Amino acid sequence: MAVTHDDLAPSRRGMDLRSRTGAVLMIISVVFGLICFIFSLIAEATRSQVNWASTTNGDAEKHECTYSSSGKTPLFCACGAFGALAIAMIVEHTYMLIAVSKSTDLVTWEPESNSAKNLTWQAAFFFFTTWICFAVGEILLLVGISVESGHLKNWSSSRPNCLVLKQGLFLAAGVFGLTTILLASGLYITILRVQKLLLEEEIVRRQALEAAMLYASPPRSPGHRLETLRNESPVIRQHNEHDLSLYISAFSKNLNLNSV
Image (tube, rainbow, N blue to C red; front, top):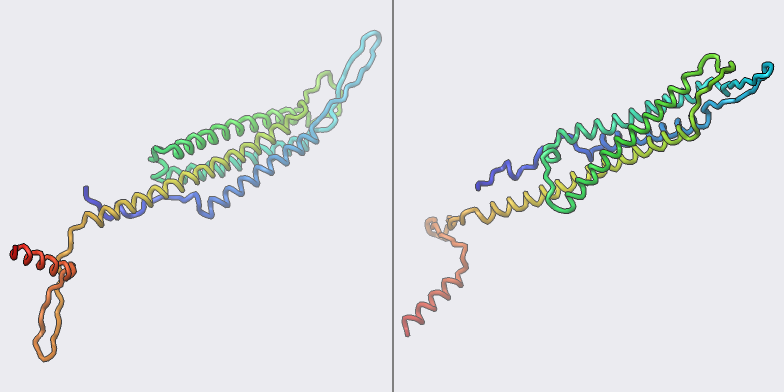
């Protein structure tokens, strides 16, 4: 099999995940994840609560409830957490998707060693758990937004039924959002390890091809050198790569055989 220059040339990798752009985008995603968690904590601390009151009308006792607040603050914080988590997820996964799709090595990579297979399973684990936590966190935030937006008007009026959120719902949404960002960062680090492994394999392959080309090349012919002797015309002398001692030893062996 002939080895060409294309085999020795490094393959095109498209967008490099190790670039400064990738690091900056990952930091931005982590910052938005922290913003989501902070907004969720504020929403949990300011969520609407219910105050019950009993009124007696003759022999009948009537129970009515009122909200403690209009719910604008937790609604605003829940919307901010929802948007921050969505932005973090879109930025991080969009960049990784574009970088991986433009890298021919990552798309056509077939793991063979145990370490490569472990990295593949880790990447699959991080990918699926990231999307699961993201979906759960966003659903919880949507539930909180829908409940808090239901009593923006006439929140202080008495009513027979009041719908409120259970304690810890916004906190759980924030935890799921923060977990999403941490798992996405783990996915990014795993892909970086895969890219490093591919680079090491490529270096080994190039060294093997260079060694194959070196040993498969034909031997060079003896060289000639033009020398000028003193007071004489130029003389062309042939120089072999073998040492003169080899010829002397071979000649002496031949003499010994003839004498015998």
